[in-house]
Image (tube, rainbow, N blue to C red):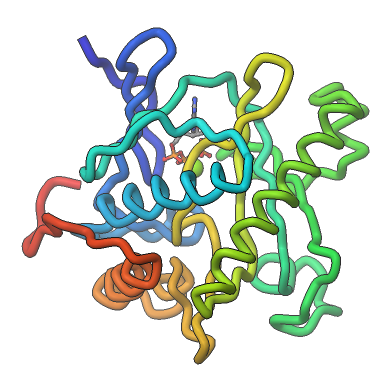
Length: 245
Ligand SMILES: Nc1ncnc2c1ncn2[C@@H]1O[C@H](COP(=O)(O)OP(=O)(O)OP(=O)(O)O)[C@@H](O)[C@H]1O
Ligand SMILES: [Mg+2]
């Protein structure tokens, strides 16, 4: 029997077997840490399809991910992992919360080398920024683990930046999550317009920034469809009317 393990803002997680989870992407969009929420029919399948594709792209660069299978629906099958309770944000250009935290940056200033940030995953605390030194001092990771997490995050960012550049797109920033696997880490969660910012040749966003800026579900879906099409994906079975999220 498949049972639900967790329901988050953007996904439902089901247990398929001891080591296998099903992640179902919801037809919902949230902004402002969940304060704004709207039904977005078709978003789930778009994010699942884009995520599955980008996990495979990353794997092509030799990076291990949790993806086990994808059947074209709004669900992906993944390896169940013990998660590192950190979000790693890699920034290639200044944007979003960085501009608020450090007003000295101008918008879309290139960050060379990319800036790596850690946020402690705790919804009730709004995922606060933590320093690498904090991570070590509280014993969340060892120095060796921390170095490896940074190395892997930069590798994922470099791989995806290169891939997007080959399609005429620019990766602004990306949020990554990892799980422990044997004596290493595996890239987990999702890679979609909900977790990165990508700009096209005209500096149009093909990511959730569209919804943050306009609060328009229609514009968001248009951007996600455009992203899928730029990645060469044909997303079938997009609902034309609202269904349960
Ligand atoms: N391979 C995996 N094994 C176990 N848990 C995973 C795996 N990949 C992702 N997760 C976890 O599954 C959940 C996915 O749900 P979702 O992203 O909707 O949550 P959320 O509302 O963003 O909240 P949060 O991500 O802060 O927990 C996250 O808690 C994520 O860390
Ligand atoms: Mg999440």
